[in-house]
Length: 179
Image 1 (cartoon, rainbow, N blue to C red):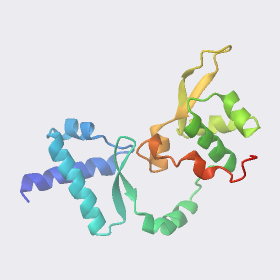
Image 2 (cartoon, rainbow, N blue to C red):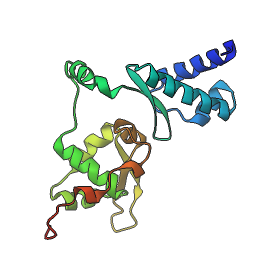
Image 3 (cartoon, rainbow, N blue to C red):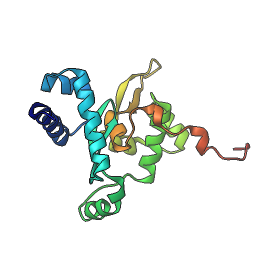
Image 4 (cartoon, rainbow, N blue to C red):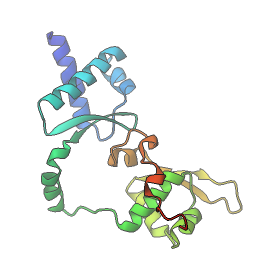
């Protein structure tokens, strides 16, 4: 491999390493100033190299871009490290609310409360503060309630490329038709 190709791979790798959000191919092309085909080849090469070398991290395509993630095989060690810090997890209520928003978006607070059967204002505010959901606009209805949907951070957090990768809802439906 030529010195230029090695240098370009290193540049792309450095960009992926420091980015706090997925990098799109277009962004890499604009920063590095190389053709998209070359970026595609670099991303493919890096993905394969990390996989073959059984590295502690992987390159994944998520939320319209590419990002480095820790290797799932080492999740138990990472969990120990993270739990040693003051790391906040999502509560059951937050996960329920986030699921409703992910599958039903755009959705209002009233819609969420109707599905959950309880007021979810506090949980919605928490999800907004964590960057997992955002306001998408206002519903054309009396009072113009705010519509909510998921963010790219949601996709990143759950390792999804798009909402199309959410599991089908029928996988979670009860078998008893009376429900």
